[in-house]
Length: 239
View 1: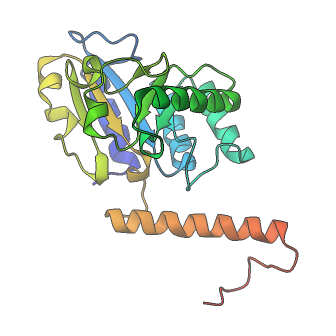
View 2 (view 1 turned 120 degrees about the horizontal axis):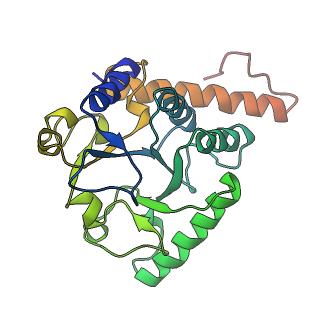
């Protein structure tokens, strides 16, 4: 079961194995390197909590943020403040690019990737160096060139030439990281986690996401209450 405690133990176990947590432009496939990556699909708040834990453990990682998201707004003051704090903690903030909303033309993808990077840079006041794809199609998994002049996480040197492990959909679909051949051999690994799964709100995908929906509903009602005098978020819902 994923939890905050089990995440702390996983990072501690990797440190005990003498693994160093490095950036994409530092990784050596033959050394004990971990490229720690987080795709933030659903919650900046949970990303911030994970970034704080990692800072206290002396670990740096990569946080990839959606510019076009229906679940959070990077320009909302509390959210932008947390993104800047993540940078201050020593982590990298990159772009989580949903290529599906743009045209299939590669030049068009380059154009909009550059645009989204600039938007994110305006919030974090720092260059965006890295891109990860949100729910990538196979053609992007096989694309080995930079995107908008920036490294992306599915280039062969990060996705095929070194080990890869992910907690996508709330499970270890590539096996547990500590059981990975790369770890057994003492070579490099890209480890992808999603902070949404690593919290103490439940032990199933349904429970975790139901809890997130309740949290977001409360936030939404509070915003309505602050901006519409006749509305009172403290009253029970009418339906």
